[in-house]
Image 1 (spheres, rainbow, N blue to C red):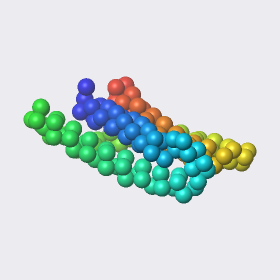
Image 2: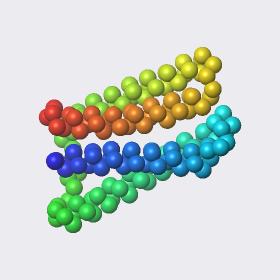
Image 3: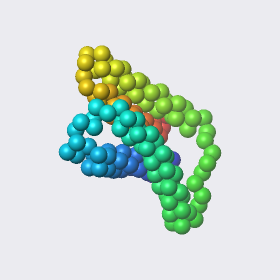
Length: 148
């Protein structure tokens, strides 16, 4: 497995673990037994605002740990140069993830227009953001394996 592919797999695993851990944490700490909070906009605002720095810090810490372990095992630094192929793959994955998130956003807005509860909007945004990040990493891995 190439170094870039390993980094993508690490990012993918970290994203899944972070999102699942955070969702379970929010559920068991705030939502369990208190379903009225699901319609509280302030709760959802705080939930999303806390998710962003937690996800960023988790990614940074995991990648630092990966770089240290990689340096110890292989005695090589992680390459930081990106060529045209890397940039092209990054652009393709970003485009696909933007379409996924935009589709999820539009579905959430349609749900609100049809009178669904407000938590459907936030769960739709949460789900489409999570799905977009996961699909972006899978697409990168696919393109690196395929040899675009």
